[in-house]
Length: 334
Image 1 (cartoon, rainbow, N blue to C red):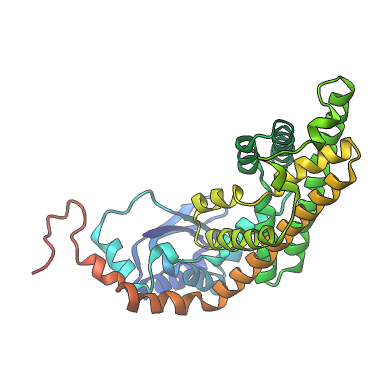
Image 2 (cartoon, rainbow, N blue to C red):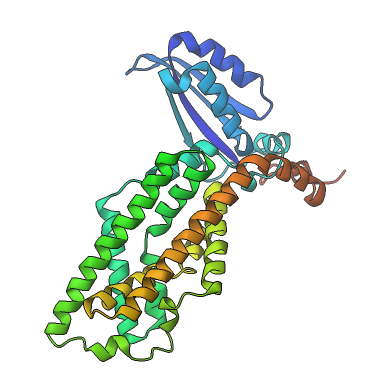
């Protein structure tokens, strides 16, 4: 797998930039168009890079000053069915799927710590679904609320703040979690109270035994263990850009369902429901942030050696390139 770099360079930096690109055997398809950039004036340089080495190239670009005085855009092609791309993968240690681009991780974390209207709306909708799940004792709606809930982006931001030694990022992630949950719970609590006055919700709907959803406000040791595992999985998925895995994280931890139950507890002033829901919510967020931070720290300091060691266990990426590229007409083994 390769990533594509589109670089806009001031004229004075273009020659040293091209020299840096030429010297690496994990870079190919280098193109240069002098004077192609209109605003700000400069040259356009493009290349394909082995994904495992994208972070290293970015560090070179920062030292050259391209990131400060020019422009860097990184894209991932849908496919790269050519032999040289396979050779690039072989030249870089590890497997492309294990590559971590820390600049991309940091950018995602920064974005996840920014409060937006859509984030808050998704949170309110998710907590509303969770409250309805409690009232109807529906496990299906609990899962739906987990999927809709956007909270893991803020959890990931807080975890990245720990790993990257960015206290401000950690603080902004936690602040977003607290404020968004507080706002969503307050909105749903008010709506639940109004629904009670209108006769749509009875006190018994909240306080009765709920076999399918009672677990969401009963924190225990297993709740914390699940939160630790989910935070670890989510952090690893963030590092290696596995978005599908992060969806699994969304539906494994009962943060949003606990918030929905908390809103109902507040609407009916039921102290048991309030205390249990607050405990579950705090336990889950704490566990995910801690384990996510630990995993990102470990990945940051040990991942290169782990992926290099993996080649001794799973075989080198070069073994894969022995097979012919699609449509190349070559036959493996000779």
